[in-house]
Image (cartoon, rainbow over all chains, first blue to last red; front, side, top):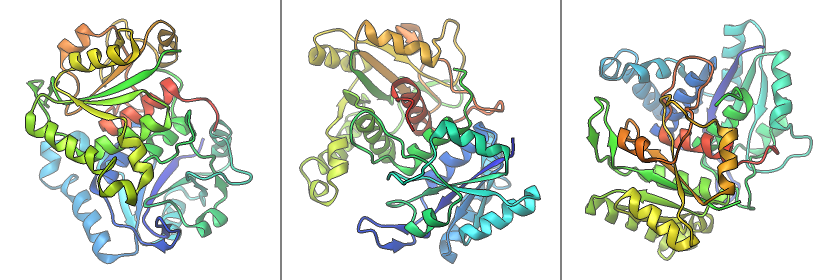
Amino acid sequence: MHPVYAALVHYPVVDRRHRVVASAVTNLDLHDLARIACTYGMGGVYVVTPLADQQEFVRRIVGHWPTGPGAVHNPDRRAAMRLVQVTGTIQDAVASVEVREGLRPQVTASGARAHPGALGHADWRGVRASAPQLLLFGTAWGLAPEVFAAADHVLRPISGDGGYNHLSVRSAAAILIDRLLGTASG
Amino acid sequence: MHPVYAALVHYPVVDRRHRVVASAVTNLDLHDLARIACTYGMGGVYVVTPLADQQEFVRRIVGHWPTGPGAVHNPDRRAAMRLVQVTGTIQDAVASVEVREGLRPQVTASGARAHPGALGHADWRGVRASAPQLLLFGTAWGLAPEVFAAADHVLRPISGDGGYNHLSVRSAAAILIDRLLGTASG
C-alpha cells in the first residue's frame, strides 16, 4: 500500500454564498490534523494557502514545536508538527508528494455534498494499491467546484442519522481518515 | 435502541502530571461536539464544569445561537447548539438524562489509555439495547481515574498504525461517535 498524505486547503474554497475565497488558517485545525496524521501513520500534512502572511503564521506555529519552546514542553506535539508543511497551491502539494515518493499521487477530494460517481469509504481503500494518495479537506464552506472537477477521486459525504450534515473540517477529517486508514481494532 | 448523550467533561480531568484539575472550556470543542451530535442523531450534549464563570461562558456561546444574532446568521449552527446544556457535575448530567428519558443512563468513559475489561467499539453497540447511554469525553489530559472506576463501561482507546496516541478531544470524540453510532454507508 502506498503512503497517504492530507492537505488542509484554504484556497480555493467557497464561502456560505458559494463564492470562491481564501480562508484564514485556524491554529487548532493544524494541531488536530497533525495529531491525526501521526496517529494513522500518514506521510505528511500540507497546509495550502497562497497568502504570504498566512504561510508565515503556519510556519511560526509549526516552528514553535520542532525546535522552539514547544519541543521541550510537549514532545508528543513535536512529533506531530514535524509532519506539517506549507504550500501555496494544491498543485505544489502534489508536486511535493511526487518528489518525496518518486510517484505522482492521486488526488482525492472530500466534502459534504453528494457527487455522481463518488467513492464509498471502504472502496477507497483499494485505490491505495495503485499510487500514493493526497486527501483534500476544504476549510470554510468546502472545496471549490474546480477542485472536485480536477480530482482523481471524490469521496461520498459522511452521513449520520438525520439530514444534518455540517461537521467542522476538524471533525470531518478525523472521521474520514479513521474510515479510510483505521484498523477495525478497538 | 435507546438514545445516546455525550458529556464533554472539564472536571474531574487530569493535567500532564496526572493531577486532578478543572480545565477551561474551549469554544471550538462545543461547536464541534454539538455539530457531531446533531449529525449522528444524539439526544444531547452536556458541558460539565463546576466553575461558575465557565458555566456562564458556555451559556453565552450557546445563547448566541438559539435566540441571538447567530440564529439568523447561521441556522445550521443554531440547530446544533440547541442540543447543548451545562451541568456542574457528571452526576447532574446523569440525573438530567434520567429525567428526560425516564430511565437511568449507563455511563461510558473514553480515554487514550488501555483499561482491563474495556469494551471494543463494535461490542459497545449492544449496550444501547439495555439503557440510554451517556458517553464521557475528557478534556485536558483525560478523565480522572475515579471517573473510569465509577463508569458502567470503558471503551478501548483509538489506536492507529503507530504507537502515537495523542488525539485532541475533538478528534477522539468525532472518531468514537462515528464508530459507535455511524452507519456503515459512505
